[in-house]
Length: 206
Ligand code: TYD
Image (cartoon, rainbow, N blue to C red; front, side, top):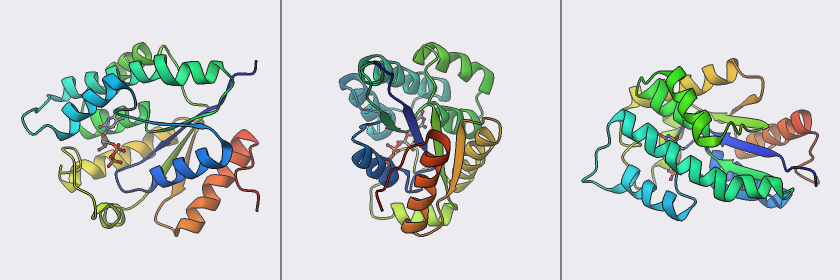
């Protein structure tokens, strides 16, 4: 059995990454998953991390809870699907912890890297697509939805996160950056091009 390919979509809130992750997963009949929260344990952690007004995790606690969510996600959902030959597309993965808790909160990237290796047993995506966009474009796109605890942080935090994703991408050849400021059609073609050139996979039939 050939192992399935593993692809992560990353970016700041409102970048449009979730739309692309869903579209590609549908087109390729891949398993679509997300973080934080796509397991029963993860759902409880997501509530604590993002929506419980009484809970204010410290940066380290936030990083470890994100990592705990990921550990459960990898072992119970992602790894079994990959081992069974299925492609897995995840909406956020380890780069989100490095960007938000590392670049955003200022935690050590090296320490976080060790935590993430432990949490994931070293599982890394074959391809990570960063949908990059300006903060004001992202804010306009997210304006209809209720902001969670991290989305409510000020623009300077989100700028650090955005720059963090770009720096991660600049230092890792398994990353591709797509310009998410463009129209939906242009972003779609850029994502499809990344699948074709990096993985040899045709997403759209047209
Ligand atoms: P997401 O589910 O993409 O947001 P939405 O529900 O608006 O689509 O992500 C939830 C938030 O969690 C987002 O602000 C980013 C943050 N996050 C981290 O800070 N670290 C992480 O490791 C992950 C996976 C997410």
